[in-house]
Image (cartoon, rainbow, N blue to C red):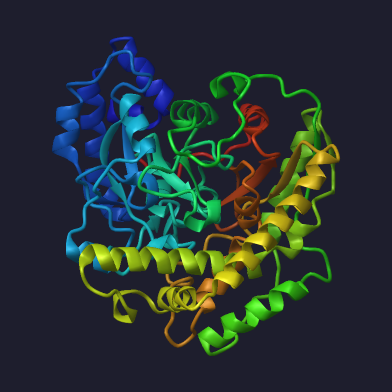
Length: 508
């Protein structure tokens, strides 16, 4: 029965409980068994709450939509549950035995919905990397090939879901951290619209200036829609609230999307290989370089041919499904706004480190984190208020420029999720001999995901292809702000067409 359960999504498992064909206890015991059997090969689950989960399985509300379904929480951001470890992939919080003082709105909604939290998943240090290889807990391996990365920062969550340990897991996305690991592990990852899911009360909407969003990684479009129904909606004090949907998101799965106008981009046009910076950013950029003490190398913009091919074939499929598809995209997506993102990330990181220094009662410094994270923290500590506001203005201008393309009549944009195939473990780890090299290459890998953290638009990665080397390749669909309904309708169309890849070699 364990293997059969591993093949069911969360909605399917909940249906078994409601029908009386299995108990919540049996679901949880089966999931625990899968974690114990599979995780030694992957290192996805770093904190295990098995005995508490067994107790909680006996006190659930039968009418809860996900009664008894096991879930894993991400060990960062709004994955906090009062009294549980919350280490953000860091040695300094791990060594201090730090535990969350409160429970996030997101986690409370998941628990109220009947999910049973069985543990917490691995993340990169401070969530800063596109690979999950923290010094604090070691690397998470990709279930398709354990020599490769599982993505980040939700790499532990994605590996656990792809391998069948749990049907879905909490994930968050500040630059691609839901979509990147979903792509690398061959599952589904939706970053919802800004303000769709509350990040409070412990986290602030100001953290990362609204770049980060919370939801989950899943194995079915209906699970994505159903969990979005469960956790979406404003909470007291939220400063950004997404438009109210016309109906439940679950009702969009299988609904006719109509004939949509869809644009696609598969590679960077000639002439965009070298970055250009707007004049208003140059003084800010100069102070950034001064704080670093050197000029970091910027990788040339390029897209792996197999990633391009996946986007091309998805565009062709959408045309076969009756949509109007053309090679068109918002021009700013290829120039990006990275020069404005860096001060936001650096200041947010410096703020978090300072807050944790106060909490732990000691200064957190260079010896407490990897070399690149320390450099970014250092830059944040030396960023002026004027530069921060310049960065915010640059992101706002970028958002307005991007939105014009959708306002001109397009419904969806199709892109490769990532610019390259999943990297080998170690390839994106910080190297003290090459300061910020891994950080800059991470930014290059996420060139198609970060723009939509800036704009706050919903974007979903779908597992549509395996590379010649047997590694997953995701394709990203992006809708206008607040239009998760359109994404879910089209994602369900692609799923129904049989375009998704199957299970990895390491699976329950």
